[in-house]
Amino acid sequence: MIAMQGTGVSAGVASGPIRFYRRERAEVRRWTVEDPQAEVRRYQDAAAAAQEQLGALADKARAEAGDDAACLFETHQMMLEDLDYVAAITDMIEGESVNADYAVHQAGQQFAEMFSAMDDEYMRARSADVLDISSRLERILRGEESLGNSDSGPAIIAAEDLSPSETVQMDKSRILGFLLAGGHRNSHTAILARTLGIPAVIQLGEELKPELEGRTAILDGQTGQLVVDPDEATRSYLEDKQGKEREARRKLEELKGQPDVTQDGKSVRLYANISSPAILDAVISNDARGIGLFRSEFLYLENSDYPTEEQQFEAYKTVLQRMGTRQVVIRTLDIGADKKVDYFHLPHEENSALGMRAIRICLSRPEVFKTQLRALYRASAFGNLAIMFPMIASVWEIQEIKRICAAVRKELEREKIPFSESVELGIMVETPAAVIIADKLAKEVDFFSIGTNDLTQYTLAVDREGAPGLERFSDTHHLAVLRLIKMTMDAAHEAGIWAGICGELASDTSLTELFLAMGADELSVSARSVLPVRSVIRSLNTNRNREKLLKSLE
Amino acid sequence: MKTFTYTIQDPVGMHARPAGKLAKEAAQYQSVVTLLKGEKKADTRRLMALMGLGIKQGDTVTVQVEGPDEDTAAPAVEEYLSANKF
Image (cartoon, rainbow over all chains, first blue to last red; front, side, top):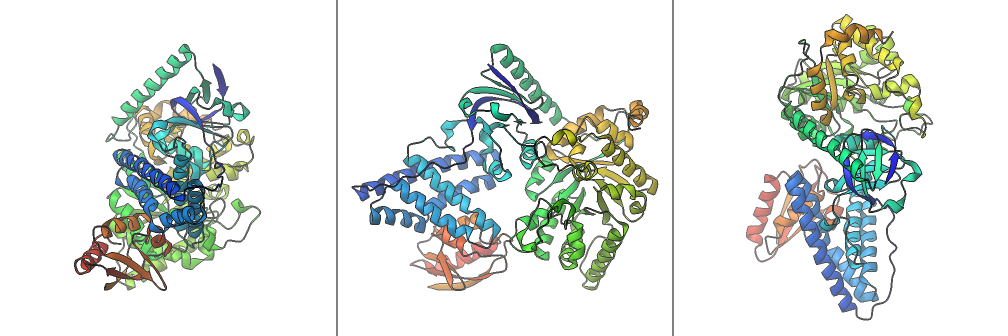
């Protein structure tokens, strides 16, 4: 038995074999074949086997995640049969008398290059699909067990580190947990693991050696514990914990449909954060009462050019219609800093976190901003919309924004396009400046939503994805941050507007009681955190500890 | 050969999923269905070439249907495109 300690970033116990994620592709050798016709048949047999694997994957995806998920594998099946792709492979085998592995590899590269040369971000990403089907064929030709083969079974995925795109591309149904040697608590991969509910332990360091491949392990994503080849006692302890967690999850399910009210009758609006309409199902199935932060960036990140008003209108309308009477707070464009979009041609900045980002881009390029606002107001006729502006630091910014909003409304009136008269306008409070002048900002808007991730980064002057070792300087429960949250709430309530929290901290159930004591009107959390936070809210008596909790901030 | 023009409505354009669906639909007929955008063209059996046309929302493409059943296939494909908001 080997025990290791890392940092737990996504709660839950997982047990199973460890499988190392390998980035590098096996080297493809080229050799001359005596009988090209036989080699073509070998390729055709491999293609048939690949079709079968993909068919099985599509069926499984359909059963677990619906038609859309299955469509990905069906598309792979069709790409595999693509006449040009097939011709490229067979022509090369016959014309150059080379082995099938090599021809498949070359064809994959060639088609991937065609896609990556396209000017469309989405199409560029399709080069990964071609490489994927080619490597599936290569694996079959080499006689290796396929990664996607149903025989390979679910495993705990171990890696040095994982990029968000690598995490997204993995077959989630085969991932029991994540083990990373490096990683960061607030990295996108950790956030994704929490969203998907996959237990994860990071920062295990050099002890996470490739020799552990295939060995049985149990990880605890809450405590950060990892045990390889566990003895009977450890196994039964952790499996017992796993059982209890499943039981707890079942209990959470019973909270669906229950109101978010404390024991002493204080009610809170429990909303969910989303970054793409794809997560809407999770929001609805977890019974969130609204959307407290809809990151509109996805429209810009997925596009190769500025999304049109029509495109945006359709996307917002879909979300508003699906949410019905429930409130949807859409945050206007927040790019810059770590979120780059090529066609904006933003200048390179040494310190982009303090640079041209979010509302600063919108106010510098009013035409981009107006397109988004027109789309938002037009969509407002189809649901209960609120608009939120990111990265506000000064009163003039919100005054200028309101002038632009008024101009947009006038335009729509003139064009006789319907929109809702009761769209609330609010701001993200995520700069220390905004907190300090919150009394003045509160007079300008209908609500505040505190973005704790950026507020922590700007208050403590620590980059949340910075160098390893910085974590202990980036205390999310830092007194300074908690005081700023309290100051924001107080200023909002003084002015008679509502205030909520939409950062990662809103999901932190160890702070729920404190936030309610401060008088938070709304908490917006990841879809998966809705029910756990609801369970805490319903167990609290806010009167009991209020004095003591608020005193702890002094 | 039957020809008609069609303006793409799908906000994602002719991406993998719609291209795959169209290929499936077209495979029901003996006729070959070819899409033309400007100078470039691809038939629906060539999924990757079809995606490679880079057809976007708002683009008008010419659709050619050629084969023994083109008289039934052409209106059916046209109907399929608009019914499914391609």
